[in-house]
Length: 291
Image 1 (tube, rainbow, N blue to C red):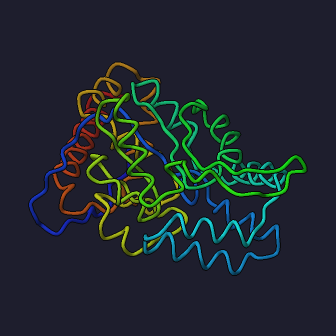
Image 2 (cartoon, rainbow, N blue to C red):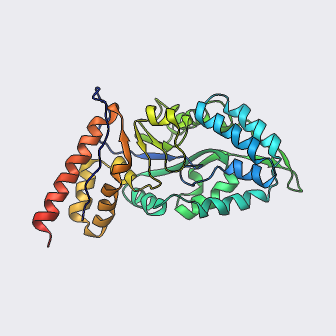
Image 3 (spheres, rainbow, N blue to C red):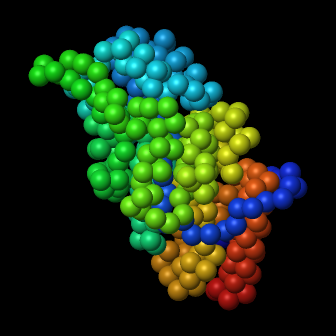
């Protein structure tokens, strides 16, 4: 049974974001796809957890010089190459609810899932494999180690090690990967991808940041990816799935039931209305035509 959608907020201003199909969804890793901060975990392993956690909060909550913050954190941590395998395992153990199901469903319906992270590639590769995202769709920072696995530095030419690196990386991606882009993440760096991204989804399932709540097009407050099914597919596709793919109807209903944890800002008013109309249509169908 479809449960009632909760109160969906908006402040009555003119909204420009419509309910469309997004060819690419760019997914943040730390405190989004997984409920930890990988670099903070590395710091804890090396006994400098408290200091690095405070540096991470500053970097994620206020934006600014990410490259400087990254360099300072890694210099303080001095990670070992073997530590990255441990972080990878913890990522997988703390994956967000329904990530595998949602990503697979989106991929099957024509959406390209891309991981974009200021974290560390070698820790993210096993997580991506677990979720079902190909390695060529991983964009993250690369560390440099010596033959004994001791830290030497990071690749400063990598766009994600630079100021507003996510925006730069998406701009580069769009040269070869066209279509509308949506991005989901917990931090300010996702907000800064405008105008390269068309739809910015704030994620607060693990950590909630005031600026992200206020400035994201919509804000997900619950630790689940099921709302993405409704947010990234257009109404025509959603209707086709509901009426012609009964085996997937339960997943759609689950997505509707997760919508009460979403805050829609003024720009997303039309999107909100479209989802409500779909919900009402499907409720009517279930009540009148389903036994």
